[in-house]
Image (cartoon, rainbow, N blue to C red; front, side, top):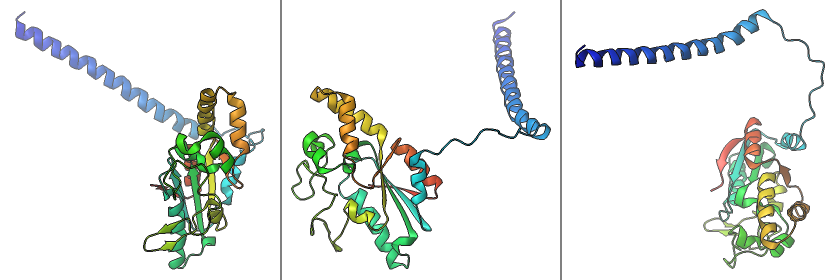
Length: 240
């Protein structure tokens, strides 16, 4: 056999091998598609005798979303004023175009580095959240020792061309804005801080969850909440 004939046989064998793989893959795919279709046509599902599992409290919380104009803001980082300014802008501009806050469903998901905004001032001072989460005090520009967006004082926030704006969490809540916070991030960050301080992780985590601000919902994870909000017809917006 010549060298050319040998190469030709190798190519033919390789093509045959690849062709076999493709045929098997196609057969598996067709089988996977056909089986459910055949089952649908041949069998009727048996009536379930078990009750539907109870919904998670966080799932029920999403039923609070009202209105025809619905958005969810994804806040994974402190990002200056943005996690709080954009919900306010959404409400203001909807109001200017004929849609009051009662017709607007706004959800803010505080996750990853932005979870600190879900906690009271006591925890910011005790655990130095401003340093840990790189969150500045809007006035001093230093790491904040308080939650700057909880019950801010008059004149705390001014936007050029607009003037003073009420973008505190409590102020936004009064207009129907919903806030939730990622429990997974709380668990991880509190454990890291506990290790650094030589404290028990469970105790630190409890201290944090005990210090959640009024009206802020604890959710299994931030990404879980983003998915649930979109299932409730909220349009996704990155808070940045």
